[in-house]
Image 1: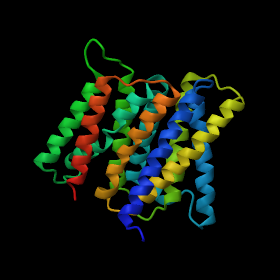
Image 2: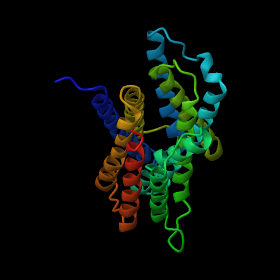
Image 3: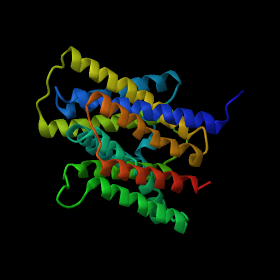
Length: 284
């Protein structure tokens, strides 16, 4: 039985989220033995070379003029912010907490689409956005238990939301390979900025090299699957499967890093995911 476009899109979105969750594990592990900036820079350059090679084999421009358009420059700026601060968050804080906060990105996109592009958002979806933001506050726990480092993940998700919003105004016609090349170039830029500030680049050992290779491979698989998913099925049908990333992240964080998310993290994650799925499916 042949799969529908929505079913294929959902499968690729789920595969993408699994790839990104595994990439986070490799980045966190690699950053234990070398500067995070170096990790992001190496993975970014590996992705650029891979996607540029794929684009050239298809006869596509590696640096199309569309990359220099206003929306694409804004998109790239937001992506650098997202990549930089999310990388810091998964390195300096619990992977489970950071992944839970990241799930609020689609809710920020919904709110931003209404405020920036004037898209119509009904009362029920606005209430869902507010419930999702309440979930973020539950995880952050402002007050005596507030951890400033958790704000790194918040800035990262705002960067990714800005990237997604800018993509709506970007020129059409760019292939998955070209978008992948640009995305990993921004990851390399984020890594270069961080490395310039921190310094201390080292020659990776066998384990470090393995972690870098794993991060690059799974990051590229995740990025390619994501762009394919978004271009295959209906956005409202495919996007809710972004939340499977939280499932993969929680399992990996508990199994590999011994993390045990507390009740507040579980409750906040539930509020974010539940409200996000509701807000996104209401667009149908």
